[in-house]
Length: 175
Image (cartoon, rainbow, N blue to C red; front, side, top):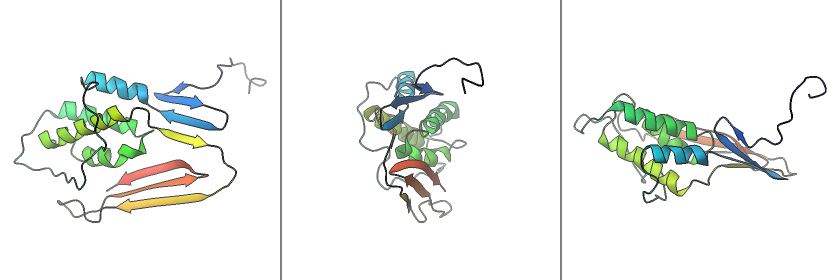
């Protein structure tokens, strides 16, 4: 392109729209460690004890009326930041998708789960998505669901991801 258009050579990409890009000879690793640290500092959680999982097993969230409500602005900001982190962190996709359902009716219990996600992020700052070069072309897909996990409407939550040449290239979690 430099032959056709006048443009400077900036070298290998290391940072793009909040994504940290580490390139090696046969692999590219993408994560958002800097952004996650910024979130932890913003909410004074950089010294909290890390959690091993982003959500407790069989955790069910509802928009219960008998639990103390809280300011939705802080909750929405935390969930929004977490949603942005899912660009390089498919491991938090399910819980962030679950928490985003309660933007309009969040309570203290929901806020505790968001804080747990941040504590999980604290312990897994170096996690991300790695793309490696392989010779064998193989397309694989994986899925899982909770079959009626929502106690309010009995709808399922489905999660799936696809790999090509052992590299994850698409993931999603939907109700």
